[in-house]
Image (cartoon, rainbow, N blue to C red; front, side, top):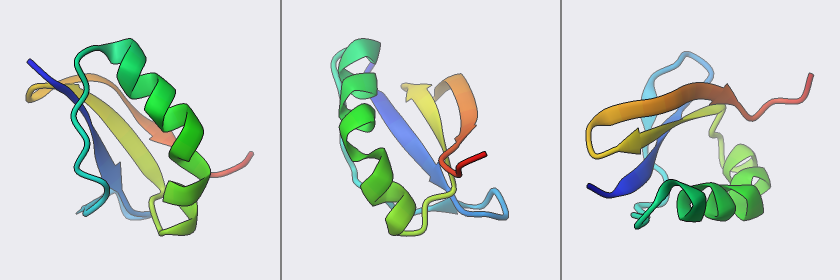
Length: 65
């Protein structure tokens, strides 16, 4: 399975975002750590980490506070 992120807007609806796939959870989290501010600026409100179709965790808000 490949790890990837699901992107959500403020109403928790799935929206388009970077179509990246990662070999493992650490790689996915490292990528997210370096891009979350860009994602937030592009309208992503929260993310969910997926392993294939299974949710690993989330939704995780990108908003401050």
